[in-house]
Length: 158
Image (tube, rainbow, N blue to C red):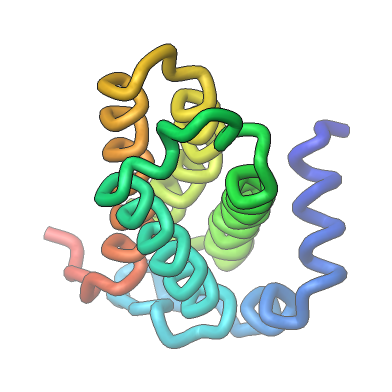
């Protein structure tokens, strides 16, 4: 059994929003449905927005360029929150997959869950301020994308 499935199962059992989302009845495949108001997905939006605000602050202030920043409590705490967000994005993917939905959001959430740790690692590994700024901007973009894909209104299949 893969670690991802085990992690998803643990999150599902520990977070009531996940269990509540999974318990909702399946939706007709052709019906455009917004999940933005469901607790799990609303939580993803809130967490992503909060983390994006932090990253935007680092970009504006240059705080991430300070000596020892990557080893400090602020960044390590952020890194932990980003890992948690990635795991919850994967859970969102699994909930949509379990419902039988066949839409882009399901795939995008999985992609975000896979990209989040890579973007954080790129910030951490950036050898200079210029590359760190680019890495932070890419991370901010990913966090914003996480918000927008969930909150954008669904479109009927063409």
